[in-house]
Picture 1 (cartoon, protein in one colour):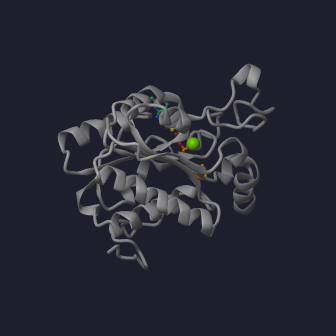
Picture 2: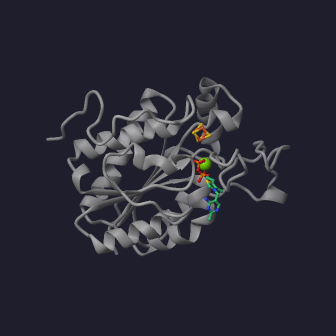
Amino acid sequence: MVKKVFGKPKYLKDAPFHYCPGCGHSIIHRLMAEVLEELDIGDITIGVPPAGCAVLAYDYFDVDMGEAPHGRGAAVATGIKRTLPDRIVFSYQGDGDIAAIGTAETIHAANRGENITVIFVNNGCYGMTGGQMAPTTLLGQASTTTPGGRNAARDAAPIDLSEMLAITHGSAYIERTAVTSPKTIRQTKRAITKAFKTQIANKGFSLVEILSPCPVNWKMSPVDAVKWIDNTMIKTFPLKVIKAEVGKL
Ligand SMILES: Cc1ncc(C[n+]2csc(CCOP(=O)(O)OP(=O)(O)O)c2C)c(N)n1
Ligand code: SF4
Ligand SMILES: [Mg+2]
């Protein structure tokens, strides 16, 4: 029987988030803490925060945490899980982190079927360092390094990392969701739950990609930022289950 969490989740510290108003990171942190409590796995969970705006995630999650250098979340999580296989291990990574500098580590961890859960927060830019183009920046989207908009001929097309990970042999569960409305937030919580259940069942690599607003770098109000995800970003990154529990190698 899954217990429902009301009020502050047990596995969030009593600390105010430092994220900008309208940022998706704080919603995602809360959902993850609720899931850890509902599945009753928080006491055995170890998280791996990224470089990026969520670098201080260990100030918020009340679980064991071990920092990873930029992009190396899947590699660090692999080491922790292999050393302590009875623990539940997640990495929490931005799109610049996972889809640029950490691409190799992530693809190989998925292909090896590492029994870890990756939370991939796609806000279409390098948020922490001021809004540079990330591999996930949309065509035509302005960033500080593409002020006239991303151009396919010059800057390449956005990368579909989750679809790439789905074709690896060891990936078991991959879903893309968003945090733009009560409906998508509930879908995201269900996806995070399924991803952790995949790890509990020892089925291999699980990942949830979450489209997440960065109103500050997108130069939008928080309301316009969620509308932009719903109306524009999902055309490039459609919300869907990309791979579901094919099983461990
Ligand atoms: C090896 C290395 N290269 C570059 C940086 C600088 N750096 C810190 S955060 C960041 C971008 C983070 O963007 P993303 O991963 O998308 O996270 P967000 O802030 O958008 O959540 C960069 C380039 C670093 N810390 N380490
Ligand atoms: S810069 Fe963007 S990703 Fe970073 S805290 Fe602010 S809104 Fe969130
Ligand atoms: Mg980002």
